[in-house]
Amino acid sequence: MGHDYRPYRCRTGGRVDAESARWGEETPLVEVPVSWTLDDLPHLEFLSSPARTLPGLGDAERMFADWELDLRYMLRETEQGVLTVTFHPQVIGRGHRLLRLEEWLDRITAYGVGFATVGAVADLAAGGAQLGRPKAAPAE
Image (cartoon, rainbow, N blue to C red; front, side, top):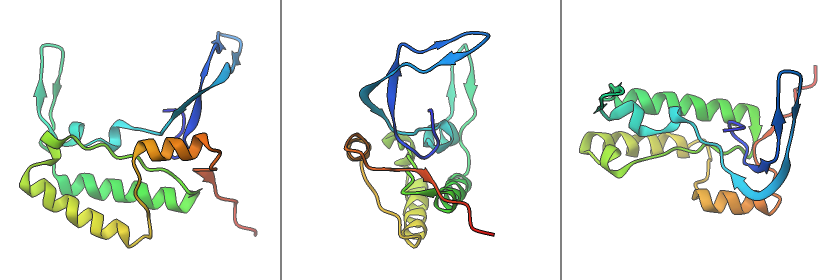
């Protein structure tokens, strides 16, 4: 969760205290950006436990509309950005939600985006692909 749209190498041995922060050494492990806001479970699933209640049962259309805005922002601000969405079969797999998913996929393909597994994205990043770089500011 170190970047919104750019995979990065994890680090080990870093130090943070009240006066400073020192980055640790990079490891071979690549982290692909992920966010709870791009996960279907908190939006759509009702869960209750003694510790908390996750209200869920939200409108899938609203969730996908928010995700589309995240995508549009990423496309505006980054080169080759990565927008990682998480689906749980037991959550997204209801008929009305699957219809909204199909509609969303139809809309976002119009932006010319590609689709890949997290493993494929991690392999690209590990191989040196420059994913999620900020776009250059327009000349004034």
